[in-house]
Amino acid sequence: MVPTALIEAACRPYRAAGRFAWHFASAKLRHDPFFAHVLAHGLIGDGARILDLGSGQGLLAAWLVGAHAWHRDDASQKWPPHWPAPPLPHSLHGIELTQRDVERARIALKAHAARIRFVCDDIRVAPFPEADVVVACDVLHYVDADAQASILRRVRASLAPDGVLLLRVSDAAAGWHAKLDRAVDFGVQIARSGRANGLTCRSEAQWLALLDELRFHTTIRPMGSGAHDANRLLIARPAG
Image 1: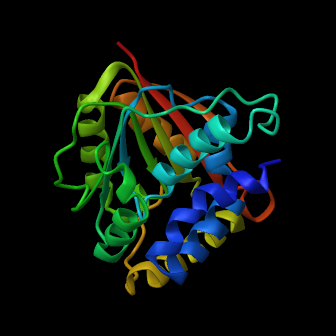
Image 2 (image 1 turned 90 degrees about the vertical axis):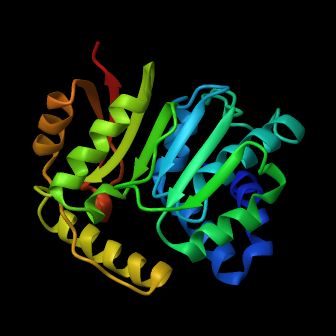
């Protein structure tokens, strides 16, 4: 169970970015299991250099910063006992195509601009800095198959030898659950950017085959239940 106070701490900076930004952050952090899973399983190490692909309005950064501050200041007795202490990243570099989301992220996280940076660019062509953790949550299906492979190849090159890629995807072979995921993604595109493009989806087996071809060793964790049962978190590490 994610503490309500933790969600509120992570969302609070978005009040400065407008009503939509705050409501979107509140709903996403409350209902998307990805964010809690990252903390509960210690998937991002303390002092990590993070590359966030498709960073949106900076929710991952706000989540990590908010969690660290809340744990440090208020939550020593309230932090879930089975969760490790939250990490404090060394840096986070977010790349996002939608200018309005970049502006919301910069406003919300301006107090941390020295180590958290957001750029408006296309992940198909944007330069990737060296990173210990690369996060690509619900973003690669917005580009075509060739671009997916190219992006992952560049991720592999940018990762530290002991780094990790956290890739959240929808399993295209998951029946009606996958169709629902695609419908939700179309709605999110329209709400955030006013546009909706076609999606390029792969099955779980196809994602694993691509990552294997690019010399990743990958483990899989389910990322939802019920209507979101198609979601998968692929934890991929360079395989030598």
